[in-house]
Structures are given as structure tokens and as C-alpha cells.
Image (cartoon, rainbow, N blue to C red; front, side):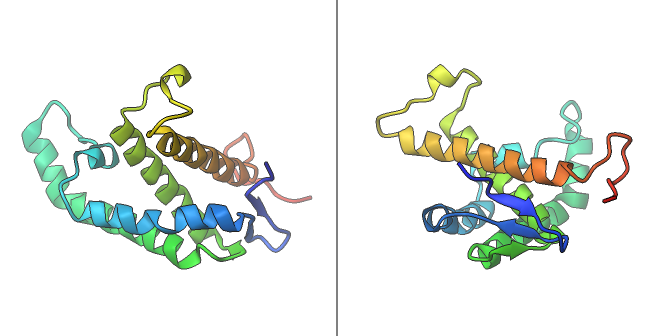
Length: 162
């Protein structure tokens, strides 16, 4: 499978997704955005408790930052929707893709009750396409992380081209 994203010499990112991949991804931001408007229990993974042992502190945290967290997730989904057919992305857009793809993967994994044992992931039957999408999203997240990490020096500073 070809690398779906790579940094160019200009510093932006080339997005190499097939028309089929783009078609699959096209509807996902809207679906997650719709789910964010409701009380879907699968969203718990996107907003884990900051203070799991202290309900009062956790509620205060949600009151203070919950709206900003939700707005950030919606903004990332909007960027993905707006750039789904783009061939090039800037760094902010790549960051939005990373966040949105990971959020989509987490929600789908929660709905599927994914386990770490790959033998529990069916390759045929009615849930097989959803598991395939889950694995594809995980692979795409991995590819985005790898392209972003390539510019990080192990010392914690950004790599400099020679």
C-alpha cells in the first residue's frame, strides 16, 4: 500500500488517497459531528474524566473546558470535510486530520467493543466492514504520526534539514 501522506520539500504535505478511500472517509466527519450533538455513550472515549475519583472536580473540569474540547473536535472534523479532496495539506490541516481520524477510530472501536486480540476481529460477516474501517483508520493515524515524527530530533527539538 502506498504511503498516504508525505512531507514535501515546500514543507506542506502531499495527501495520496485513492478515490475509494476518500469516498469512504467523506461521510465520517459528518457522522461523528452528528454524534457529538447527542448523548452517544461511545463518545466517552473522546472525553475521559479528568478526575475519575472525584465527581465534583470532574464536573467542574467539564464545565470549564468541555465546550472548548467539543469545539476543537468539531473544528478538526470541519477541516477534514473541507479538505477531503485536497492533494496538499498544511501542518494545521494535518493536525486536524490526525485528531479527527483518531477520534473516529476511538468511537468506532468503542461501538465495536474492540479487544486487543486480533482473533476477536471478524474478517467476514456483518461486522467485518466496520472492523476493516477500524483497522484502516488506525493505519492512517499511524502514517500521519510517522510523517510528523520524522521532523522531530530525538533530543526533543525539530530536525533541521542540512
